[in-house]
Length: 343
Image (cartoon, rainbow, N blue to C red; front, side, top):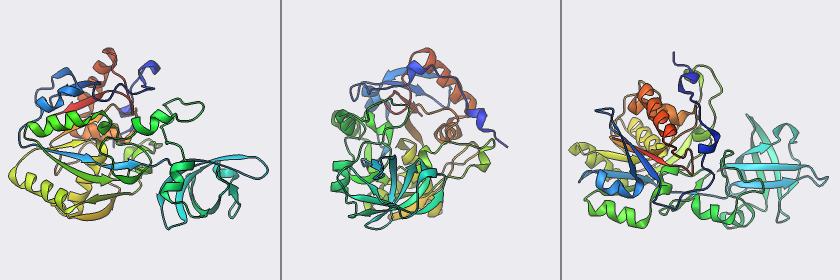
């Protein structure tokens, strides 16, 4: 049995990044699994650290402004964090304060529309109904960027966050958190990657509650992941399958890309089928990877499923040792922070 506190570490609060560095300028800790050696580079140098004929796999999900304010006519405030659309007017949402919500009660939105709690799902999740229905264009007007709580914005997100908390290749709306390893890329870095002979492919995994939900149990085996939706185009699935068949390295940008890849390979018994699916794969030490060859990832929260995934790939003790070095060297942590390349 593996304990959740096996993945704990102490992080000085000043190393939690509150603002992003200019895109493409972040520091990069390079971790060689074969030797255990660490190197200190920058994200701009990434193209020169990849191999010709690598396949670089990116998640093109687009973050929606999923945080909404609502209120009763009597004045009590509520907050919704939209998780996924169920139908045109129904969404699954986190609703706070959940204990104060009443089924069928009409809550007023900033544009005068209404939202009604319909069904409690537990753990603060509700099915809610929007009147009129909540289209993405309307959500873009009334919603806020759903920044994680450790990014302090006392007055809510700022206009710059709409661009900063989005990858330059974001295309498919539906995520409630950014695939943060991808935030480091600029078009120039992507061009540099292509120029080295690396193939690029895009998949979609809409980041949801399964990725950022905290682990609240002592034994990690008792933690349950929520489903997240993913999609591989014909082009992306063919690229992955061809790379694996040829023994080429698949380099995943971010843990969400890893989860989509490994979830699809598990569903397809070793090959990736074109189309969409749902995955609740929980990758922990002892997991046998089917496709992942190297990964670019940010530094993750203590006791998180993301840190467990990285530890499954590179070894818990060595990952925690790398984190200690990153802390000693003043690397910036979490969504707006620096990155690690694990090869």
